[in-house]
Amino acid sequence: MSDALDQYRTLQARLIALRRRYDGYEAPQEEALLEEMTAVWLRLTASERQGIEAEGPVTLIRTHDGSPVQRYQHLEAVWLRMRADPAVTEVQRDAHLDAMDVVWDQLTEAERSEVSRSQRR
Image (cartoon, rainbow, N blue to C red):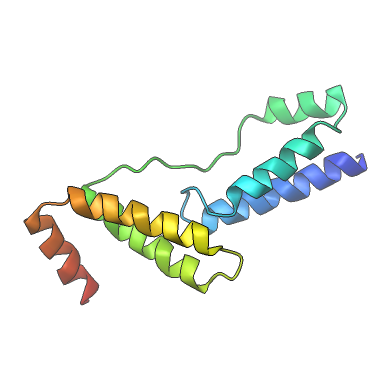
């Protein structure tokens, strides 16, 4: 195994762990990690790339399915993890809060009441 392939596998494992930490949703630190993986990918041999491509994608990314209440609750759960993560920047936190505001604005009054009730549990 070349050094580049070893490094790529390490980054791939970090990406999987990061996505699991955020329940399969895109993580704030993901973009930088993907850029690093791309740089390493360019150093791989053709046969190493073919071997990785033959394995298929390892995305673990989920779409934001579910009800609007579930989407908001998920965003809240991610927000709690982001607040405790020193690697998350203020810009990333602000962007996440903006996304929460967009979903909140889409909720009906009944859905907002449901979110408020679930927060008290």
